[in-house]
Length: 313
Image (cartoon, rainbow, N blue to C red):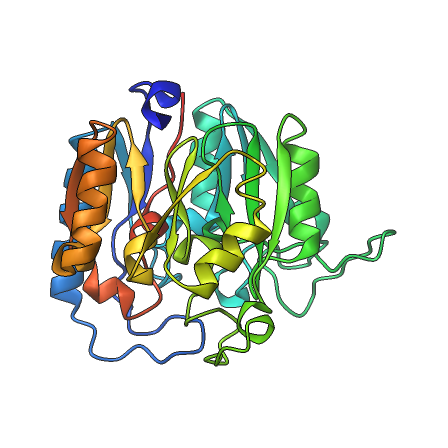
């Protein structure tokens, strides 16, 4: 189990919901009908559930960055090594700064992807310049595109937010891991399925919108051709992974930590999904499962994994 590798010394960095959460860069879908009061209650429940499992550090919200609650995108952390990402959505750049400070204070070895790009302002934008002798674009990476099941492999979604330059930076920063590129952009096209036009699949922005893990050898994916093709592109069978397929793609975003799995409340509402998760998580693996309502965050492309960074210290 992942819990055996992570022991009990994990810290989850979680931002509070920002008061300007109706003004944020989304995947292209307009966020409407968001209740700040409900979002705050849901986020408090999320933090409390995490704190019942692991020590959790909560950072204050940033008035300059309305998407700061989605802290996962700012960094990739494996063991004592961390990468500060250059977030794919330009308006979000700058969210990484407090995370970089915290990771340095915790004593991690930190590699900053943003240092690959020279900038007069330091925050991205018109003054940026980048030159790569190997021809890659300026690196970008969202943590939501990076899946680390806990072994020797790091899966990275090649998406509208994470590019080849970002994947190359991760490969250099984590030489002890096999960093595996998983193309996402053409999933709909290759399978002759209707795309929503957002640059994702099924309206999914990141790799972990569609696949997460329960333990080191078990991946959770959506039922049907998308999940099956994604598992194939990850070379899941060859690499020794066992797939669990769920009928609801939103329920595939799970947080597995210290023997407990946090699952979206939508999973509890679908009888088939709940039955599969109960059998696989509780009965077969002896783990615990908690359901969380994150409906307000779903309205602006958020999921359970988006709101924390898990550390093994």
